[in-house]
Image 1 (tube, rainbow, N blue to C red):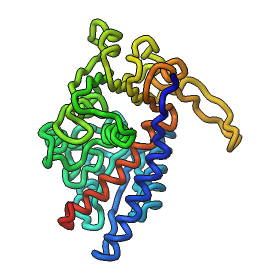
Image 2: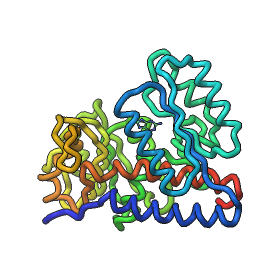
Image 3: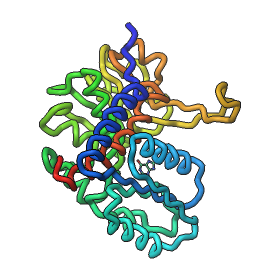
Amino acid sequence: MSATLIKGTEIREQILEEITAEVADIKEKHGVVPGLVTILVGESPASISYVTLKIQTAHRVGFKEIQDSQSVDISEDALLALIDKYNNDDSIHGILVQLPLPKHIDEKKVLNAINPDKDVDGFHPVNVGRLMIGGNEVKFPPCTPAGIQEMIVRAGVETKGAEVVVVGRSNIVGKPIANMMLQKGVGANATVTIVHTGTKDLAAHCKRADILIVAAGVPDLVKPEWIKPGACVIDVGVNRVGEKISEKTGKKIAILKGDVDFDAAKEIAGYITPVPGGVGPMTITMLMLNTLKSLKFKLGLA
Ligand code: GUN
């Protein structure tokens, strides 16, 4: 058997088209568009490329977008003042501070300074709490877990009563996706297990999974024999395992590998996400959706 591929690149296009249409409609009726600011501190190439993609995508769907780049030496106080400025800017509905931040800046303090009603990353403790409560309380689900759930739903995979096993307990992926999958509602209502580096028998848990979500950051961690035949496998891992020359551009690019041994796993799974082109494109897409939602909350449309 060969698994059905769940392609984030295709789902992204569908959702971005939906967002573009909704932005145009709101602009016509209310004379306003969603505004997103991304704050980048320093010049890490990976962060620059992520932020550039976020801004390009915001532009594509018709948002007002600002990329605010700051020197690596910016003081914590100056960064907090900058966040305050955008908290008080009515044309901005989403504020994203690209992580990681330099060591001299307290990341927690910075994330806590963002107005929770503009926290489109969903990292503020208020939004983490809202996610935990579930239902109508949820305003901004964190982008990667929201993308994972969207992919599962759009692929038509049954989640109600499913055994979901999440590998990894990070605050950005593992903990929130586990929490989302156990809530009552569409794309959830599952029985959820989180496994991690302290788990005794990783393989035994994975073998039970109808939906296996792997966010461990270890290339090829999940072996084909750990996968239940027909299971839905979501690979969140993006591991740089080397470099190659791009056929398209002639430039050096990273060779990426997921946390799942894809070639072998696709013969056993019922559904599987590729790396790259799977979960990755969904994260920025859901950021756009959260920013649109932020404006809709403000206008009383959501
Ligand atoms: N760095 C890597 N991923 C993310 C993300 O989803 N949001 C932010 N703010 N920074 C990141």
